[in-house]
Structure formats: structure tokens, C-alpha cells
Length: 124
Ligand code: SF4
Image 1 (cartoon, rainbow, N blue to C red):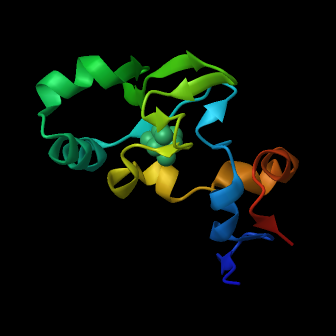
Image 2 (image 1 turned 45 degrees about the vertical axis):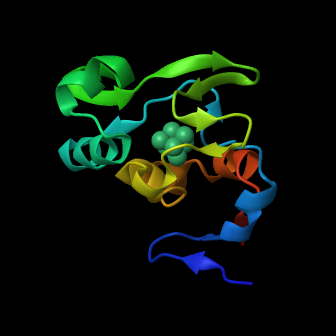
Image 3 (image 1 turned 180 degrees about the vertical axis):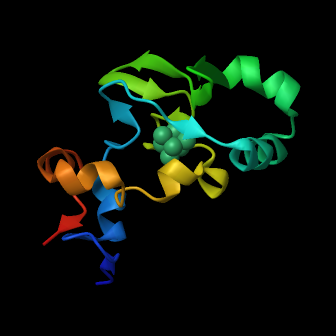
């Protein structure tokens, strides 16, 4: 069992738990999935499109930042890239930095209880 740990965080993460998780980090409560320029270029390459076509289809502008759109799903809101049949990200190899760094977010240092309730991969 390989537990990932990161300096400054008092919990670890077992990525094997993703196999049995229905995608809690991509759906449920509404939230922002921030993307940067590099993220957009990677996603465009993967989807064989360009930022001009990609942006209005998949992104919302919120206070000068860009966030991936959400849609209403069976279990609340979900990211438009969440594949609910496979229960995983449809753009996993190029998922944005915010998704790749989950669950090691500054926010969860303060709100670890929220994380423990959401993610079955959190370990002491
Ligand atoms: S981009 Fe992929 S990993 Fe990130 S929230 Fe959307 S479905 Fe989940």
C-alpha cells in the first residue's frame, strides 16, 4: 500500500481508494475548478481543439479567473468532464493542476473534517 504524504499536511492519501470511490472530488457540492493557461493548452491538445473554441464551451469566467463549468448530475453538481458512467475524469491525463494536487490543498489544512467526509483515501 503506497500512501502519499506531503510536507505541512497532517494526513496522507491512498490513491488506491480512487478505484472504489464514485468520484466524490468531481461531483457533489458546487465548487470552482480553477484552470490556468497551461491547463487550458493541455486540455485543448488532448481534446484536439483550441482555446478560442474551448473556452466558451467548457469554462466560466469568475472574477477574472477561469473555472471549469459544472452541470447538474445525479448526485448534485458535477464537473462537465466527469464521466458518470465510468465514474472518473474523462480528461484524466491532462486534468488541471488543482485536480492533480488534490487532496493536498491549503484549504484542507484548516478544514480536514470536510476532506475526511468526502474522500475515502485520506489516512492518518
Ligand atoms: S477536470 Fe477531471 S479531475 Fe478535475 S474536477 Fe473535472 S472530472 Fe474531476
